[in-house]
Structures are given as C-alpha cells and as structure tokens.
Amino acid sequence: ISSCCFSYLVLEHVSGGELFDYLLKRGRLPAKEARKFLWQIISALDFCHKHCICHRDLKPENLLLDEKNNIRIADFGMASLQVEGSMLETSCGSPHYASPEVIRGEKYDGRRADVWSCGVITFALIVGSLPFDDKNLRLLLEKVKQGVFHIPQFVPHECQELLRGMIEVDPQKRMTVSFNFKSLIQSG
Image (cartoon, rainbow, N blue to C red):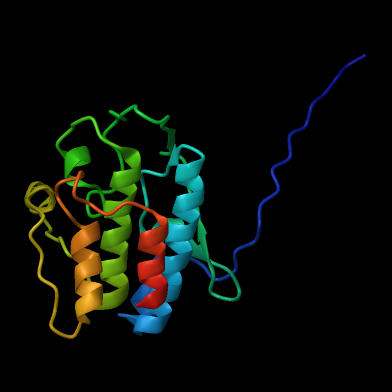
C-alpha cells in the first residue's frame, strides 16, 4: 500500500496589489489615508512583536492591499523569533529600509529595526519619496548609517516629530511599538 501525503496552503486573496504600486500611481497620500495605513501596519507589528516575531524586511512591496485598501503584511521570509532579552545578528532586509545597526552588522533588536523600516515607509506615504536614496549602493548605505534626512515644510509638525522618532539612528532612542505610539497615530 502506497501512502501519499499532500500539503495544502490556504491564503487570503489580496486583490489590491502592493502598497508600492499604489504609491507609484498616487504619489504622496493625504494625511488621513497615510494615518490609516500607518495604524494598520503598527497594529500588525504590535501583534507580531508580542509573539516575538520580527519581520526584518518591511517595505511597500511587502505590504499588500485588500479590496477595501486594508494593509496585509506579507513575505515573512526574513522574519525571526526574538525572545525577550536576546539580540539578532543576521544582516538582512532592503537597503532603503534597513536600520543603521543592521547595515553596520551589529547585534540588534529586531523590533526596533522594524520600527525604523516603518518610519521609512511612513515618510514615503507622507512625502512621496524616500528619506535616503542614492543610485550608488555604498553611498546609500552611508546615508542610512548617518540618518540625516530632510522633511519638507508641508509635513505637519506632529508628523515631523513622529518621523524623527521612528527614523532615529540610536535604537535606544527610537520609538517602539507601544500603546502610547498607537495613541499618537490615532490622535494625529
């Protein structure tokens, strides 16, 4: 008797495509829409982090939209379990979105690295471009490690503070996913 096993993977159909394509078509988003997306991303990250999962490759290409334009985080191929008190070592992610400590090859807190990536995404949502960009990869990585970026005048003050808190070079000073952080997004 031959025994055969089949595995089935059932996934949600996310018909809206990537946030990346959405941003290419729309450009910078109105504050209300950007806040909705950010709230959904932070809520999903909060869930992951509470279960010791760090995504480590957050970028608009890995954020999918359903038929109602709700965010779904995808591609957990670089994700890692990080138990409390431990640090991660693998340098991974996309150069435009990776945090300075990841790029420098240091041990890092994956949760704080995810917040950096989320800050870069938030910048793209609000401004319509990336805070760090260069055609030369070496120069791009240097810009990320320095963490110096310009926020245009049209960005509201509260959003500027949020971006500076998320895209903070020192991971110990960087915002974390917390109730206060989520409250700030809701009230903004």
